[in-house]
Image 1: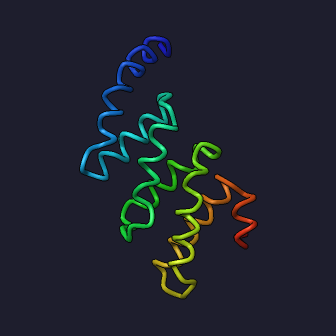
Image 2: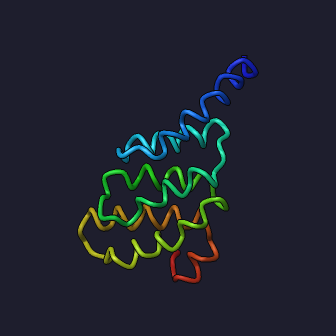
Amino acid sequence: MHLFVGHYTSAAIPVLETWLTDKALPKRLAAADCLGKIGGNPHVFVPVVTAGLGNGNSEFLDYQLEILARFKNEAKPAVPSLLAILKNTPESKNSTNAAIRNEVISALLEIDPKAAAKAGVR
């Protein structure tokens, strides 16, 4: 069964890659997520996921971080954006800020523990 499905998933990669340039962020992220799950090239889709980070839209941030955390080394180009989010999201009792910071810290620790430690993230 896996070989049968594998044949069709590899055929989907070019279609999903075209979705990476769609105007709708949810469609781009869904394409990146699918590509990651079926063997797409992280060097193609990680920049798409990273591009939307830190634009002030936290609606899809958890989804972006989930995708990036799965690809650890391949997601290292996202580290500067993640650090910028931490810098621009102050620690506070505000539950939204706390959630954002916790999600970003968790992703940073998965992606690049050395960069996280260097930035004082624990």
